[in-house]
Amino acid sequence: MCGIVGYTGVKSAAQVLIEGLKRMEYRGYDSAGIAVEEDSGLQVVRRKGKVESLEHTVSHFDLAGTCGIGHTRWATHGRPSEANAHPHVSCDGKIAVVHNGIIENFADLRDELEARGHTFASQTDSEVMAHLVEEAYRETHDLLTSVRIASEQIVGSYGFAVVCEDEPGVIIATRHDSPIIVGAAADGAYVASDAIAMIDATRDVVVLEDGQFAKLTPVGVSYFDAQGAPCQPKVTHVTWDMDVAEKGGYPDFMLKEIHEQPRVIRDTLAGRLVNGALEIDELDMTPEELNLVDRVYIIACGTSYHAGLVAKELIEGWARIPTEVEVASEFRYRNPIITPTTLVVAVSQSGETADTLAAIRDARVKGARVFGITNVLGSPVARESDGVIYTKANKEIAVASTKSFLGQIVSLTLLALLLAQVKGKLRMNQVRLLFGELADTAEQVEEILARDGDSIEEAARACKDASSALFIGRGMGAAIAREGALKLKEISYLHAEAYPAGEMKHGPIALIDEGFPVIAIATKSPTYDKVISNLQESKARGAKIVAVATEGDEEIKQFADHVIYIPKVRDAFSAITASVPLQLLARSIAVLRGCDVDQPRNLAKSVTVE
Image (tube, rainbow, N blue to C red; front, side):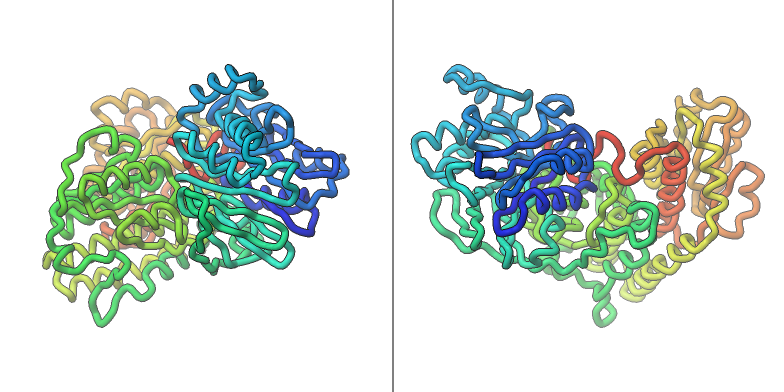
């Protein structure tokens, strides 16, 4: 992990690579590097830290080459350092490799390679690929064949781009469980782990399938299958505009993306109500097949897991289908009860999450139908699911997910309504009514964002110097409390925990002393009075209460030091509106604490390792 870019053509490779790496900074990383083919051989430049540091160093080199590869690394094997940064090179210095993913058998491969005389310069798993290709190249004298031979020895996930100074102008790329995207343009050929790195050059790209190979040259790209035979892959046209990667006047991408959420809601709902009935054609299941569903598993990680908790409330409440929400990394290591009438819903913002992909494969082997919810067209989750809903969030740059999260909630709400519709648990007029109220949340979120924000800023100033915080809620509020706590941890580095409010007296209340921040989701709901009681318990012990409350609720002021109001909505849709002030609160606290809200430390946008 985490970002790959490569170019061969007529332009300065170093400039193209640096620009591509900048475009992918949102994915999170701790070091960066490039390898450029020069007349004197491969020139490798690597730096710990930001691409800016790499760019400054590269400016002192006279790099005129027009073919090269680059990488931003998120540490898995070996601490962040210049030695562990990519690209990695072979012993003879003629081959350079960049890699995303995890090589699970790297220790055995390294031992074998060292026994055969290879010397390693890093602690990474990725370096073994450079030495494997080097060995194969001695025999084949063909880079494509050598990469194919080397990749056959690897167990794990990978996206590779490889260059060799003996084959100038050639880049070989391949993948397994880690995205590789290839495109050709008038000025050359491009490869990257994200289309954003090449969007200025071409919008027609190929998303490599597992086991496929691409051979890039200055005049175009050739594709090959796992056996080395030529093949013709599908070309995908990228439709989103480059302005999604520009801040558009906002101080950071996170705030920009928070303000894009009303559009995400509208776009995700567009065209879903047809002749008065809800339709999700992408699910690729007939109403009769859907009616047979008797159990739902939602598998996800992080923020997506919290969207799943919201969906559990809705599916069980509306469709009356038992629903479990599973952390994807745990799902595959136990023995869940799965039958042909089980629906597994895999939720992933990037569509690349390794744990979620592994869980999808396990579920399909056991006979379940799998439905994906993702933000990325053609992503592995989309390709490996039986059906998919795209959340229409477009590119999300900030590492901490906001607009994708709301897109996931809206998509899962649609699924819950559809299941209730086919099961006959909701009448058609009820489905239309609920759909209309769901659509209204876009305007309600706009209303929240249009407010002056003073109440959020005051609450943020009251919390910024704390060492820990507690988020509480009941029912739907408990799920949103979890997301609020995660957002605060992710971007402000302030420790936070979330609990169902009724659980406070069973342990967490011991944390509360004078000035301890308690952030409560206290909207008008069937459990409102219970939440008020929990706030009184906290207040009696000196807690500093921040409440997200329903507009017009004056009673809440008796129990809260800071109140953030949101429009009145049905409790089923409160997750959408209540999430927004929690996103803004986390961001404000992070800014006050001097944190980088777009690229928090140790985190990556796309987690393609287990």
